[in-house]
Length: 145
Image 1 (cartoon, rainbow, N blue to C red):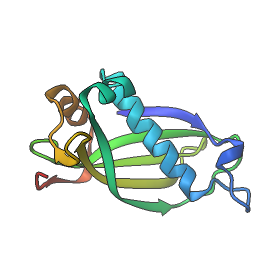
Image 2 (tube, rainbow, N blue to C red):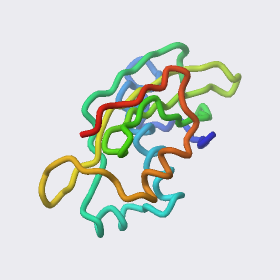
Image 3 (cartoon, rainbow, N blue to C red):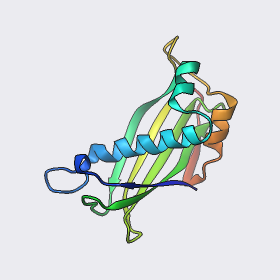
């Protein structure tokens, strides 16, 4: 399981003193990039290869509130992947200190060749990083890009 412990910071709060919806998206993206960096793909490698992830759709589900300075355990699983890795569906789950799930973010995306501005398959090492993730219960094989 790939997971990170993060905190709900001052800038993550909304008017009602709860973690704001876009903060979940930001932290989901951070955890994805931490996975890639851990597997040899820091931002500098994406720049060198001239590829990057592009998200087409995010789905958010909320279960319990998160407050300022609450510690979060954020997990990452793969809910869908094409055979060539060009398309992906990644899922982050946010857990409160009491172990209860607070939110779930499911992101559908693909890899973009930044030179041609067309979808592309990732390098084999990057595909291996995605394949190393645990599969969600509802995992599906996606159509290649």
